[in-house]
Length: 211
Length: 185
Image 1 (cartoon, rainbow over the protein chains, first blue to last red):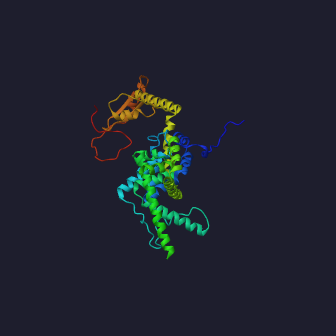
Image 2 (spheres, rainbow over the protein chains, first blue to last red):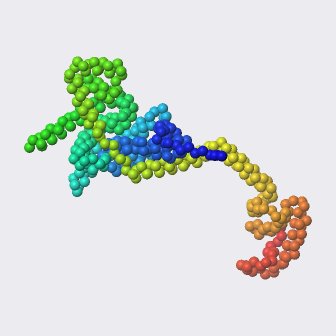
Image 3 (spheres, chains in turn cyan, green):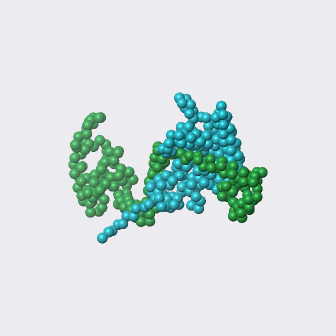
C-alpha cells in the first residue's frame, strides 16, 4: 500500500500570485527562484539601461531584490501585478541612485581605454548568427541604446517600462507619480526625440556613404 | 498637434477605448497626414522593440537566491512555532517546567542563609546533613522529624572530633580533623 504520494510541482504552470504565496507561506525557495527567473533579466535590463554602469546596476539589482524579499509580507498587495510591484521598487532604487550621484547619466562612461568601446558596444551577444548580420544587428542595437540613454530621464523611464514590462500608461503613471496624460506626453516626446536622433544618424550615414 | 500625436501614441500602443479607436480609424481613412504621422511613429516604436533584454550576471542571481533562502529559513522557524500543535506542546512544557521548579523551591529548607538554599537544590540522599557556611559556622540540619535522631548522632560524632588548640598557627594547612578556633555561639 502506498502511504505517501509525492506529487511533483510544476512551477512553470503556476502564476505569479501562486508562486509568491508558496514562498510566503511555505518558504518554498524553488517558487521564488521560478519567479526570479521570470523577471530578473528584464529588471536587470531596465536598471542597466537607466544607469549605464554594470557595477551600479548590480548594486541596485541586489538592493531591489533584497527589498522584494524583505517587504513581501508587508507591502506586496496580491491584487496588483507582482512585476509592477517589483518594478516600482527597482524604479525607486534607480531614481534614488541617480539623484544621489549625479544629475545626468553619462552614456560615454566606462569607455574601454584599450579599444575605445563603450559599454553598449560591449553588450553580450544574444545568439549565433552570420557575422554580417551580427554586425548590422549590433550596430543597430548599440545606436538604439545610445539614443535611448540620451533621452531625458522621464522619457527614458516611460520607454523602458513600456518596452521591458509592457506596462500600461496607467501603471507607468502610478509608478512614476504623474498623471496618465503626462506619461502619455512623455512617451510622445520620447518617440519624437528618438525619431530625430535616428534621422540625424541616417543623414550622417548617407553623407559618409556619398564620400 | 500634441493632441493628435497623443492619439497616435494611444492608438499604436492599444490604449484606446473601442469607441475612441473606431473614431480614430475613421479619421485615418480620410486624413493622409495622420496616416504619415502614425506610420512614422510605428517605425520608431518598431525600432525600440529591438532593444535587447540583457542577461543577468550569474553571481547576482546566486546572491539573490541566497537572500531568499535565508529569509525562507527564518520564516519557516516562525511558522513552526505558529503551528497550533507546537504552540500547545510548548505551552504544556513551559507550565510543567515552571511547576517542577516551584515544587523544588518549596521543598528546600527555609533558611536565611543563601548557601543553605543552594545545597537544598541538590538531590537529597540523606535527610540530615552537615554543612559549613562562609563564616565557618558548622551546621547540622535535619530536614524532617524522622531525621532528627540521625542529626543528633552526627552532631555528637563531629563534636567528638573537636580539640582545643592552645596556640593557633595562622596560615597552617587544614588537617582532616575539625579545628575549634573560637567560642561556640
